[in-house]
Length: 164
Image (cartoon, rainbow, N blue to C red):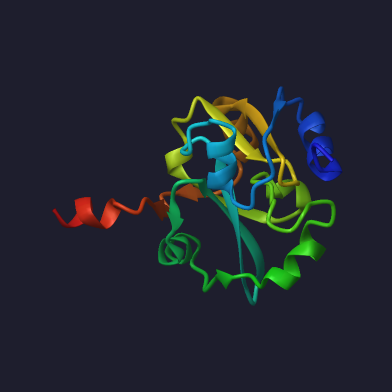
């Protein structure tokens, strides 16, 4: 499987120009970026959250950490990390851990990080552990235009520069 069927249909339905990047099997978005020799800030990772109102997928650069407090403040919710055993039902045609950033294709709410706004190119999980979908940054922004966005993540060195 190169691209999950649901995701491919969504991209085609929205007339998005894209190509795929193949890489050796990896378990994380940042490893996918490194193995594919791509800038880690242009490769996205999706983190599934939930509360009593349902699921939300947060999308951020692969080299960042999600700040759950910032997401909850932005959405006025009380989200927590979703349980891993719930994910196969949400993403039936994807491998566990290869969740596409364009989760609207799966009928899920999404919030995305403003730090992706300036990226000229975006790479997202294709639904397996060996492929990424590459698209122009403006195509990604157009697909995400109806979804809320804010600064919802930080890098590991951020606490140092914030306190200086």
